[in-house]
Each structure stands twice: as C-alpha cells, then as structure tokens.
Image 1 (cartoon, rainbow, N blue to C red):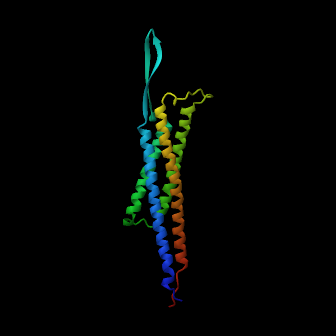
Image 2 (image 1 turned 60 degrees about the vertical axis):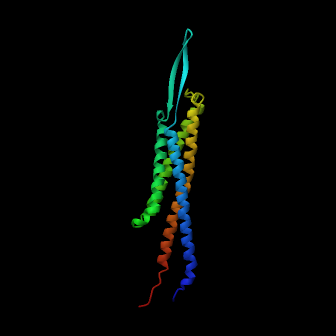
Image 3 (image 1 turned 45 degrees about the vertical axis):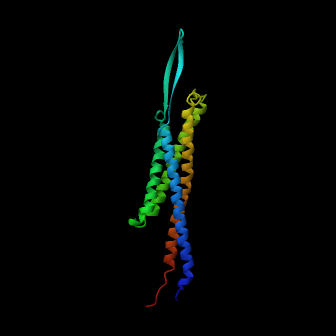
Length: 206
C-alpha cells in the first residue's frame, strides 16, 4: 500500500516550523538567562562600601573607625557569585553549541546532555540565590535570638546593590526553570518522533 507524500507534507512543514520556533525561543531564553546571571555576578563581585564611624571621643577629638563591607566577607555571597558565574557561562556555551552544533556529531547525546546540564545549573543557581537571600535577610533585620545586629542601616548602598544582584539572580532562576522544562520537552518530543518513525516503517514485499 503506497503512502501519498502530499498527505504528509503539511505535517512535516508544521513539525519543522514548530522545531524552529522552539529553537529560537530557547535561544532567546538562554540569552536572557545569560544576561541576568552575568549581571548578578558582576554586581555582587563589585559590591563594596566603605564608611567611617565615630567610636569614641577623647576630649574634643573623635576616634574614628573605617570599615569596608565586601561580598567576599560572607561565604554565601561568594557561593552566589560563583554559582551565577557558572550559570552565565553555561548559557553562553549552550548558545554557541546551538548555533555551531550542526558541525559536530554528538551521536544522539546532544539533547540528553543539554537537558542534564540545564537541570544541574537550575539547582546551582537556586542554591546560590537562596543562600544569598538568607544572608540578605539577616543583614537587613539581624537576629535578636543569636544577638546578630543588622548592618543594612549602616551600609545602605551595599545592601541595595546586593538586593539588585538577588533580583537578577532570581530572574535567572525563573528563566532556567523554563529552559529546563523546554529542554526536557524537546527530548521527549524527539524520542516520541523517533519511536513513531520506527513504528511507521512500511515493509515492502520481496
């Protein structure tokens, strides 16, 4: 029994259009995730503020103490910067792989590898953002039970820039969540398409 090629043509065209649309959607999301994670990294790494405080007065002469708040004073902020930096590099590499990947033969491992790396980076940026958010809350309000004083009333600009980095990181987190979902969906669609193609093979008589 012969198949009419005209019956399959609209389906093929629709599949190609859907695949191209999905590809460019992923590229756009990866570009946004790269920019958000890179911005979070740069703002956090460059974030510092120096202030001078009067701690005592001898006669009429004030005794000053100069303190500098830097991101690397807090391990959670260091992890935040590393996590967002790695996520930005990951998305940049994935963009290059998508644009130049046709020149290489991945032997069917490209989509599973990309989906796995996307999930790994989703977990990474989630851990970094949440760790930094915890420390930001502590810096803003302190902890009366542990007798930890807040610092944002003294280093306002430092905390404001840190909050901006957190917003960018949580934006990158949301984008990575969507990217991971689409990567898994693409993998499932490709596997389903391969399975259907295998089942639709027409046996020709000898």
